[in-house]
Image: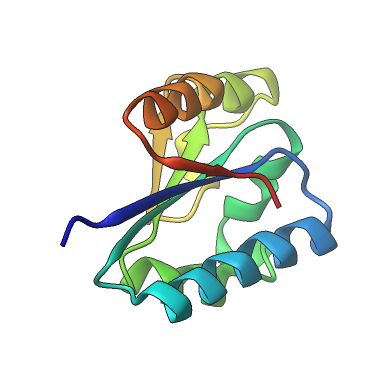
Length: 117
């Protein structure tokens, strides 16, 4: 069976929006099985705060658990640059991509389901 593929888009950093995105990811993994679905969370704009290091991030433990289950996290380099931040501000599990929007376009072009909680 071919794996399902879903890309989640987070561009807002308020706690409710981050919780909703992470809940959606947990629910998807529970429904389809973590071995049956590839999941990526792409952050840009205000959503990048969800991927900050543990001392600044109440979601860090949950993100680490999701990463251990195979979830991929991507942060927009353009957002980092515009906020005067470096890669060092982010959790180790995060990959920096040139453009969050570009990453979303690539995933959707490759047939990934787009989810914006």
